[in-house]
Amino acid sequence: MKVKDLEFREFISAQAVEEKVKALAAKVNEDYQDKTPLILPILNGSFIFASDLVKELSIPCRVSFVKVSSYSGTQSTGQLKTLIGLEESLFNQHILIIEDIVDTGLTLKKILDELRGLGTKSVEVVALLRKTPAREKNIDVKYVGFDIDEEFVLGYGLDYDGFGRNTKQIYQLDN
Figure 1 (cartoon, rainbow, N blue to C red):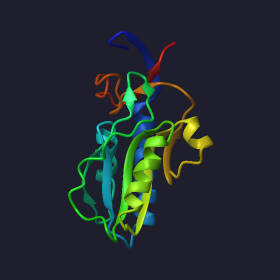
Figure 2: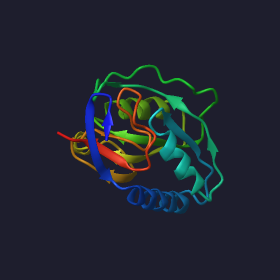
Figure 3: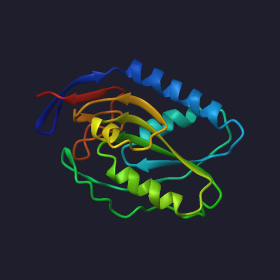
């Protein structure tokens, strides 16, 4: 598949993604059966994953959205821009962050620190993908769909300069 100037090949099938989303939701349902978390998807990349995950949740929950950005082209800049979209108090709330991909983990660590500083009861992360650098830094991600290496990936909400989000499967850059 060609997106802009780059070629991509299938990396994770639509069926594997769907099965993983259901498995993650089952674990969240179990862990939060006596809680009412605020689901906080990080836009833009997590919107498809978050939508599919929330549809599989049987627990009572609320959903709000925040936006951050740390990418330029195919590389994470590691520079967290302003966390926008929080328009309600998170004090004494169980927060469940939904991320499409944890790359270096730098942005997520800053988000976790910021949210924990607001007096939350708990803050956990559900990530569809987690790259090697985040694993090496022991970034706190409780629920992980797939661990991957250094591949640049797109599809299922992930993008390359805004393109390629609209697939059911995940593709990787074909070198």
